[in-house]
Length: 69
Image (cartoon, one colour):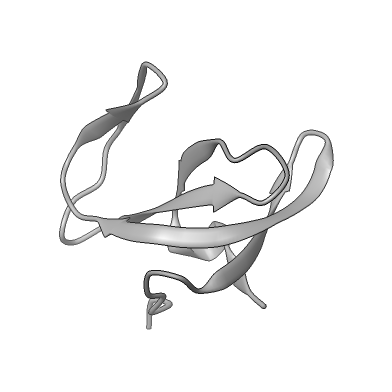
């Protein structure tokens, strides 16, 4: 069963610099672009748009990459 996260949930994820924390902005169920990168989200395979607490930058992550805090 896939993780169910909602807008505002506090989450953490791994980056090349280590772990970081942030919050879920929204669940993305259609293709979009973030910082020039294509996000291949769909209803069957959604991604979550998250915002970093440290840098305030947004990124898209698959549910399995996020840990709810």
